[in-house]
Amino acid sequence: MFQMFCRGILSSAVHSRKVSRGHLSWRLQSTCEAFPAGLADADTIFALSSGHGRCGVAVVRVSGPASATALKCMAGLKRNLPPPRTALLRSITDPKGKEVLDRGLVLWFPGPHSFTGEDSVELHIHGGTAVVTAVLQALGSMSGMRPAEAGEFTRRAFQAGKLDLTEVEGLADLIHAETEAQRRQALRQMSGELGQLYQNWSHRLKQCLAHVEAFIDFSEDELIEDGILSQVDTSVYSLLTEMDQHLKDQRKGERLRSGVQVVIAGATNAGKSSLLNTLCQRPAAIVSPVAGTTRDVVETALDIGGFPVLLSDTAGLRNSPDAIEREGVRRARERLDQADLTLVVVDCVELPRDPRQAAAHLKEHLNSVLPTREQRQADRCLVVLNKTDLLPEGERQQLDREVRQVSGLPPVCLISCHTTEGLQLFLTQLQSNLKTLCGNPQSDAPTLTQARHTASPPQYFCIGK
Image (cartoon, rainbow, N blue to C red; front, side, top):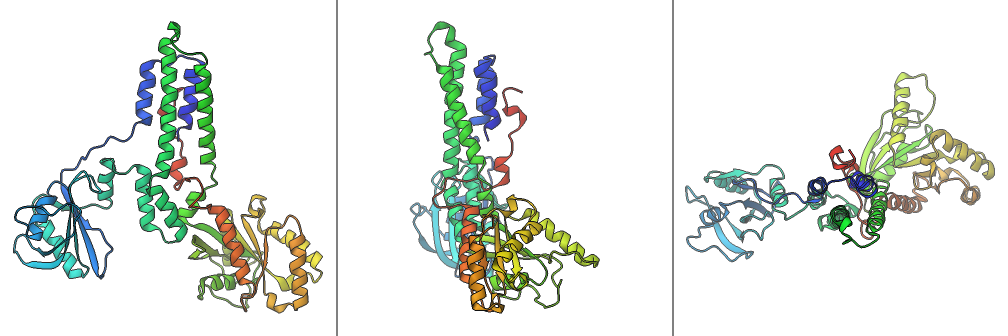
């Protein structure tokens, strides 16, 4: 994210040495300083922080200057507030009618030692719809209180400096995580690993700027050690190299956050819809002996080995006089261009009986389904030979040995969607491909999780402009 800025330093400051001290200081302040802390809102906000619907316990959060007053009125505390971060069992009452609404736990979080940095209160009440509604209405009837907007608690935490932007995004991803790998990635980002990486870059960049400013101001007085500009040049280019490697992560973090696009493709009646149903363990797509049954894209979301997958079944690839089927084929081609991983399904009964000819046939078929070399790479493609239950045992084993020895083919798996034979080996290979595409969220370096992280900064960040 600092690429243009760093290159501007090199071209304008190190090499031409025509940058004024004030200009550099302004750029440094505009680019490297953190978002100013401070809370702009004076209202006290409240909202249901736990999930909606019937549950055993619901958590209502209050944050703002009137939190202490709300706690005293709702919990019937006449004098002192409870000890900070200590649960107290109290009757929750309506401050106007003094009616008891529920009996639950109350917790007091004085600022700045709270999630938002403000005085905060949590009411742990029973999760019935009527109870939650009554408590929220009672809070809304108090002066200076209003319902929180979506994400407002987190926004106040960000403004108070409790979370940086990457930690806020990690928190949102953690809340929406559906698979184990997503949870691990979001938890690392929320703990600040990505932010710490960027802060380290910012600190090193500030050091380079300070050395350049010192050279501009004091070089004629011979107070600057020799070779300082060479050190700056080396440091900045080292920083650029690290950033380039970080940006070239092949969208691993994005895939893990939003899901890997896996597309099932192949000729008609190869068993694509059967494979979809087998992986989903439900009849998600119509299976029929009639060729061309699937004409539109059928999508389903899956968790495979902890990795999020958006699995798409597509129309069989063939030339057809039917206008609707031609549109289905066009959509299939379009989805193939967007795929992160393609499962090319082949009816092994249609292969030549000679295993050597079968391997050559597979290569030709793969080139027709996936025209680009990138799509045929081992980590972007899996060849699935379906209907192996229709082959004799000896012929099946010979075919398996032959295709594994052929160079230039992506991994090949022999399965039967009818008997599920070979399915476990196929799933193992599929998980290996998914791990390659998404990386290891537990041990790999922090990755970019959103497309905006790779966007170029505005023009005014570049000194040379």
